[in-house]
Image 1 (cartoon, rainbow, N blue to C red):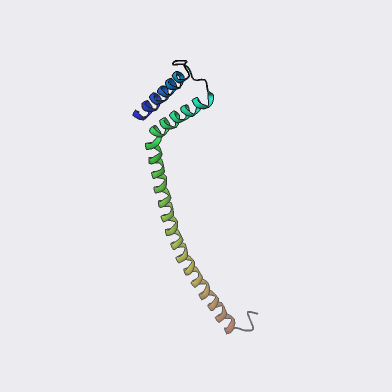
Image 2: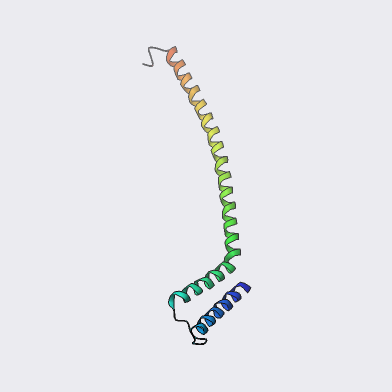
Length: 110
């Protein structure tokens, strides 16, 4: 909150100095470009100050969730590779058995 107060005070002092330099005293600055820059700086400061903890927590949780998902995906990939190897071995043995039956009875199976 100290940063917001400092920004607001600085903006007020700057506006007062500019008005005094022009000889008008303290007045309302109607220069749209200057006031928008000051307002934008104040808004960004306030948003950053209040949302810093929330954004940090949210991004940390998201990073942990992504790491967990990657670990789970790697585990599932390893399981799938093992299952694929087992099924390929079953296929090879079934093909060998089929060739054995074909060789044993050449006239019947063709």
